[in-house]
Image (cartoon, rainbow, N blue to C red; front, side, top):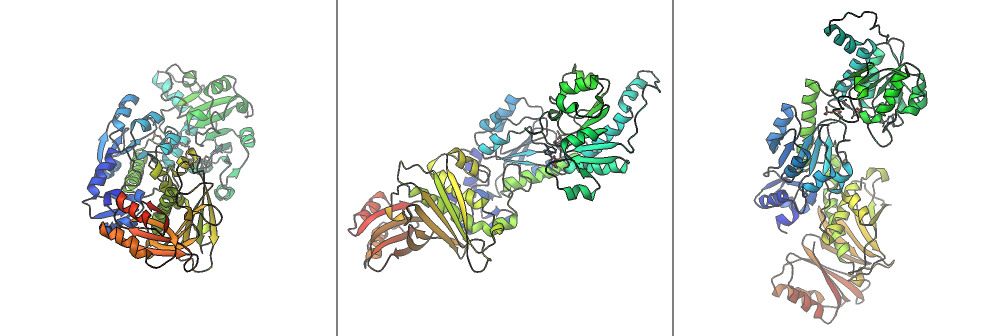
Length: 600
Ligand SMILES: NC(=O)c1ccc[n+]([C@@H]2O[C@H](COP(=O)([O-])OP(=O)(O)OC[C@H]3O[C@@H](n4cnc5c(N)ncnc54)[C@H](O)[C@@H]3O)[C@@H](O)[C@H]2O)c1
Ligand SMILES: O=C(O)[C@H](O)COP(=O)(O)O
């Protein structure tokens, strides 16, 4: 098999200029990285197509917002880096078709138009921070683009800023500072409130929320938290009680917001919920502006329900200059500074650069936002089965008669592993890839496999068959069945009426071991010819000599039969594609009832 036909990278695109150039370079490359492991070139045939990347190629990374030096250095070691800040949406759309990865902070909207304008070249979006609400994840997934973020490096900075706002608000630091600078000395006006003994409700008890809680306890506050998804024992461990949303609102003197902006949290603080709060409550928001209905907050401030608010984030950033909220005397505002410490920015830059480089190298990222995370050791173990899965998908779909329309696919994994000890997402993605790519122009990868299958109305159900024996190998066999279709090779229809192909990995090489109800054994390394006939002597020789005359090398031959001299299926592995003329001659061999050539 030609290297260029089987080699591309994790997130490549059929139409990508970059992947074409990588493919060209692959032809002269002697080693490849597969999920962090360097493989010799001859291992290519056994590698899943979407996790290979040529170490010689240099992708292009567009850094659209200021990134810490250490991160830039990491990116430059691996890629051509274009730092272009303050691009207009139109300029970004123009540039993106020349880029394999894009790195942003919260200031760039990564819209559907950007993915569409990339022409399939954009493989990775790196968000140098936590929140990915500025990235159209659905569009990224549809375009097979991986989104990675930097979820941990700015946690402490955000928590510290939350505490800074909490204490500054309670003591009117910002307002008092402005008044002193204006030549005033208003000691009575800026009398604050104490924190000790007050109840703080942390809304969203994730990374930042729990760090805020820890620090607030150090200030002597009574801390409660609301988070429908947080484990109670994690809260208990730092002396925080998890409470319902309404209970948090009703009992808090201070509310600090730390949830992501999602459809469920959008404007979660609104007229109705402000009405449930203690009069004189104080609110801190270092999460996202959109979780507060800002007009309702102004009303609540005017009504004295909310005594003060300290806000780092806004629905529109920057907010309009004449915003009533910003201008409100009881509001302290900062320009989205939560993550802006020197330390956090260096950390975030390194975290995102590592994730982007890893993704471009074909490693499955630990910080992937729109793809399942498959740990490296699982990936390594599944590698040969991943190849098998794709090839079975390719075989199965080629056996479908034209006009049948594939709707329902059942995959059975025979395994001695406990059910929760086999992660099949990667295998499912490869079967999907094998089935869809030969019949469409879409390039399938782990990011878009399930989405694309769903979009095409392809239902893939999975079943585990628990086998006796050693669970050393993750999978004993994989069976792919396509229901409710006709086959162009009738013998591929099983006793139960579906097209069925089954395969195993033998000595690291994928083999086809069943077609319909016939047992065969042929290595899935080249392409395959399947013939059906009544079992009789001389058939292998007849077909072999037609192929030999054309110098087509036969790599494997195997005959599966119901019983001696009864119906049989002959599977022939070939290294080269036979000509139409040779295939016609095979079909004309009198004993052959039907045959099909299946490219892999
Ligand atoms: N201002 C800044 O510069 C800055 C810096 C860092 C993070 N952030 C923002 O802070 C927020 C939290 O970041 P994180 O790193 O802690 O994220 P995280 O994912 O660790 O925590 C978010 C928590 O919110 C919880 N949550 C989800 N829906 C909820 C709901 N309806 N009600 C209550 N809780 C809910 C989740 O269960 C999770 O525990 C994000 O919005 C992030 O973008 C802002
Ligand atoms: O979600 C985040 O990480 C913060 O909001 C930080 O955003 P920034 O990278 O734009 O500072």
